[in-house]
Every structure is written in C-alpha cells, then in structure tokens.
Length: 133
Image (cartoon, rainbow, N blue to C red):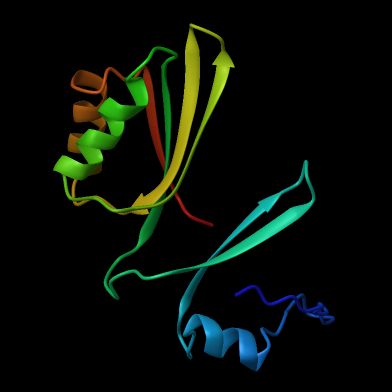
C-alpha cells in the first residue's frame, strides 16, 4: 500500500514523518533511516534500515575494471567477510575500461585487510574508505 503525504521542512531543516506512515512502516523511536538525495533528479529517498546496535557505517569507493563479473567479485568478498551492505551504486566511468562502485557498509573489523583482499581477489584498481557524514 502506498501512502502519499505532503510534509514541510521547518526552519531548522527537520521534517516530521506522519504517525500513519510511521505505523505502516513499523517505525518507532530510534528507528534507523537511510536518506539518499540525488541533486540531478531533485529526488530524496528515505529507507528504513535495520542495523545491529553496535554497527557503525563507512563509505567504500572502489575503482574497478569495467568487465563482466567485476562487481560480483567485490560483492562476493563482502559476503565472505560477513560485511553487510546498506547501499550500493556502480557507475561506468569509461566503457570497457573503468567503473566506480560506491557502497555504504558496516564498518569492517580490519580496513587494511579488506582493502588488500579487494585488490588481490577482487582485482580492484583503487580502494578508499571514508567515514559516513
């Protein structure tokens, strides 16, 4: 069931999710939401996410070859390492040459180890991690 509401941003930049929306989605106090904004299409998407309380999030940016199966290798590594993904987007930079995969994931226990695995097993060209702002 879709629910359409018009909401207003207050003078401090806050929005209020209507009670019926919160109830329909099972949202309560301290529910976690992910906001994705797209400046090109002028769209905002808010999605409920369920993280373990001890989880912190990190942004991962990987430059890879634009070849079939390249992204699947990277995703397999995350699965093998037991690292959950919250958001993922891949963009071709130069057809048949390079692509960039950006993901928001749970913070891995050992970033340097994961970086090495992504480069060796996943054939990543470049790997960067940054805190989620």
